[in-house]
Length: 81
Image 1 (spheres, rainbow, N blue to C red):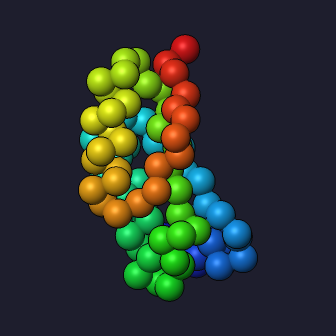
Image 2: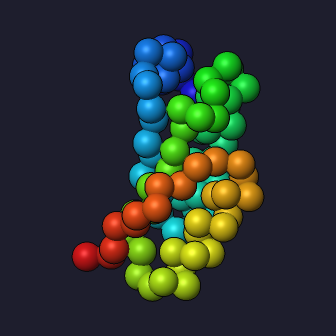
């Protein structure tokens, strides 16, 4: 995480990070939020939106994965186009 990212996070009311359903995208996104949390950003300011979803099953699995990491996931998702 860069100093710039942390400074922006400290000033923001809410940080919404789009994330794709692949582990190659999910794991770095969770690591970034974990870093922000460890730096003092409350989890209540951190949220994910699932992007590029190809099926309801994929969305459900992704949502569960992110929630198990302890983060809020917006109730809507964006389909693959």
